[in-house]
Length: 430
Image (cartoon, rainbow, N blue to C red; front, side):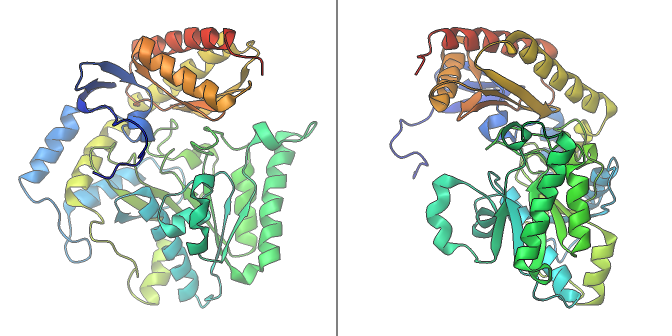
């Protein structure tokens, strides 16, 4: 097997998972706050309802081609996904497996829409620094991963970036949040004008800045200001909710906190809660009508789009999440996490802030050797408390399963607060 990290020891073998716990082959029981490290396991492991749905589907058929045959579960899942939408998107396109595939599908649908309207020169995509949209070439080109910069010679040339949207780093002293939001939208407008509005296809952004920065919600009205700029220049707004969608923010769609409707929105890893890979792109009937009148088809496809087994898993998973009880629980647990960390660590000299939405949260710290500090927190939490956290760079991200129990979250918080204080007390000043 060709492993990712070639110079590191072979990682532990996982024997099984149950709820928010992972059981390793060497007998350890670990409480996981990372959702399987990539934040995909939003309902934990061994969920009987999802497994039964998958078994039922296995007895029928594992997959049938999306373009040639219909699957009732696809219809049911699409209807469910739109049932709590507060935006105006009303068409669900099953893109493939990963969020990166969905990103590229959204980009292609965006260009096809412009192309079918005769705007064939709109080939530029603008995105933001410190973002991540997937590891395929086009998704990488609109993302910003410094360790992957060596791939840049392979990237399309008609890609551009503006600054990350992060009030904790870039809001000026004395500047209001609204002024900062308007400044961010103005930077996008300036970039569009620099390239030429007739050449710009779409602006792509994570609804909240994700794992690279650490769960930074936008300033109030930021997305509304961005929406106005996009409308002004016939530029599509594409939102990436691979990380922050499907209820993880406390609403099914994170953008519904911001009261904005994008032209395209894509989701991936959380859709089937890690029980199977599946990704989608949402758009509107207005876009569909253009496709129908022009070429009469979507000029994009993948072998496993709308994979029948994955769709069955996703429908079961999303049926659990699409309830008032679950969404209220997510909001309550998120508030508990943020309030507790702020109350217990807010006066600590290493504490910078804690932020997020629902159960997508990060604590940012400021200290010498930040990255090593985060790694040390991660190590101590695992070795001494059997709890997995994602600490590195400048932050600790908490993205546990959405159905984590209050007593489990309190255990995590108590151990983390203790660990943070102990590690910080022995941390070198330089």
